[in-house]
Amino acid sequence: MTDWTLHPCLSQVEALTEIDAERRATLRDGPDDHATYRAALNTIPALQEVEVGGPAPQAVGATGHLRVVAWNVERLRYLQPVADTLTGAAADVCLLTEIDKGMARTGNTHRTAELAALIGQGYAYGAEFIELDRGTTRERNAHADTENALGFHGNAVLSRLALQRPALFRLETEGKWFGWDRDEPRVGGRLAIGGQVLLDGVAVTLVAVHLESHSDPDHRAGQVARLMDLIDLYDPNAPLLLGGDFNTSTMGRGPDGFARPDLRNDPLRLLRVEPHEPLFAMMAARGFDWTACNVPDAPTQRFPAADMPRPLGKIDWIFTRGLLADEPTVLPALCPDGTPSSDHEGLFVRVRLAQN
Image 1 (cartoon, rainbow, N blue to C red):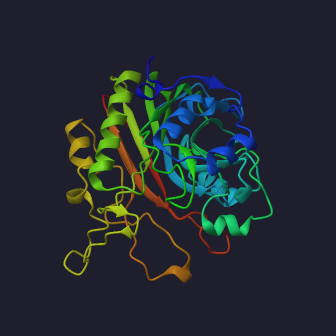
Image 2 (image 1 turned 90 degrees about the horizontal axis):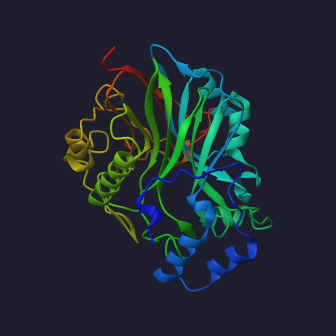
């Protein structure tokens, strides 16, 4: 039998296939060995589906350039402020990560569909994980009186242009979130989601990326290598933009948290991460550029004022190949009252075809 995780998933549905509450509870409370995890991964249809919906495209394609935002929107808790930021950026395509569907912590709503309606864009959504409980300890306590309706948590591409060939790229199937070891039991694994839009009549591939947070630099590089192999199966020749949360912390994270380096000898380490993260050398070898796509030395993390001072890192990135980028901008993740709308800033860039 062919392993579906080794190929892009192109199966489109109007709504992800639901997994009933009883089975989610059984997976949460039952054995947490790898065989049980793998059996669940292989038999939950939603993990192999791309949900497509939202308003009809505003245009078939773009001319001249594309305006792209990449943003980890942290569950998409703050719907209207995020919508206002995306509208203000006049984004043609939005590459978004960490979005709930049917989770108690976000009102058991379909956050991607709501956002798409607010900004007038179509969407493709995929589930990284089936959440088997209400989330983290804080989230479980805050929503103890409410059950998850569906338990989906994933990533999305939104576009005002016609989105062609939406696809999932599953980056890992290790199952390290299965069980209670990380205090948030889940079935699934990190994924990227993408599709193609036309720019001057040429199909351009755009992919929202979310690498593992409980990881280390070599593991992240391995996930990027897998993504590159999957994209080669999808379309090896199209101009390509990758954007999202690469979690480039420059360090590893184990059961006791990050092994933080001594920043006194390298105070810019968390911002100038390239020497410490082998994924950058890998991307360069594959022909990608990031220097024109990102604001130098600008952190992309944001925390509430009560959590500061706290070292802020540059963990979100945009990479391009076959495209020329300009106007890189960090979009502040702020609600009108000045509180964070996400724990990540948004990234904006404008791109055009390299041969034009």
